[in-house]
Length: 304
Image (cartoon, rainbow, N blue to C red; front, side):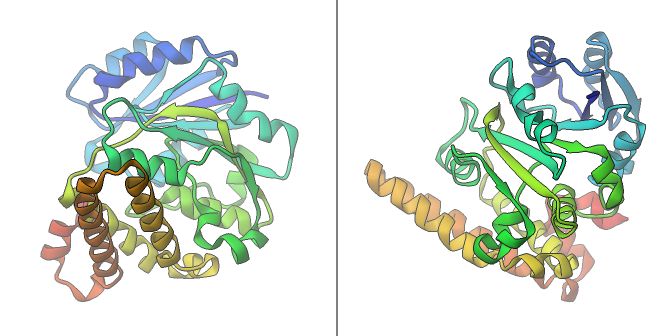
C-alpha cells in the first residue's frame, strides 16, 4: 500500500528539522512527501527540499485549510494520504506504522488519527486539553455511535491523520472555503456514508499550543462560526455544549486532585472566554465584518 505524507508549511524551520529527522527513522517509509508552503520567509522550503520533499509554493493568502489539502491529495500517488502539521513530532519510530494499521486491516475504515501529547513547554490548559481530547484507549467510531457519543463522534485532527484516498474522493476530499475544521467536516461526511473512523492511541505525536486568553476566545469564536455555517452536519451529531461541560468537570477534578487551587481561577477564566467566544461565533452573522475580523483567529479568511 503506497503512502504519501502531506505537510502544509509556513515559517516552520523551528520544528521541521526535527520532524524530518524523526520521519527518516520511521519503520514504515512513505513513497513520497509532498509539501505546500505558504511563501515562508525563513528556511522552511530549503529544509523540506533537503530532506527529499517535493515542494509547491503558494501565496500566503491563497492557503485554504480544505482546498489546499485537497490539492495535495489529488496530486498524491499514495493509496493512503497521511497529513502532518509542521509542529507535530512523532514520539516513536513506529508511529506511522501504527497509525495506518486500521486502514490496512479493515476496508470499512476510511481514516485514522493518532494521539497528541503535550510538548515539554505545555502549561496546564494545553496539557489538560490534550489529555481530554486524546485518551489512552483506542476506539473505532461509526455513524450510529453519535447517539451515545454526540459531537465527539466526529472529532479528529489533521495534525496527524491518515485517510484512504478512494474514500476521500467519494466525499470530494476537503471542503473549500471553511474557516477551519476541514478534517472534522470530512470525517462527518465519511461517517454518514457508513465508513468507520479509528482513533489510534498507540500512534503518538508531540503537539500542543499555549494559548493566551485572547487566543482562547478567538479559537472558540471560529469554532462557533464553523458550527453555524455547517449547521446541517453538526446538528446531525449533537451539540457542543455537552462536551464542554465534560471538559470543565475534567479540568476542575484534575486541579482539585493535585490541590492546585490557584490554577482554578485561570482555568475557569479560560472556560468563560471559550464559552463567550463560541456563543458569539454562532451569532457572527449579525455582527459587522470589521468586528468579526478582530474577534477571529483567521482574519484573512474574512477577506475572501
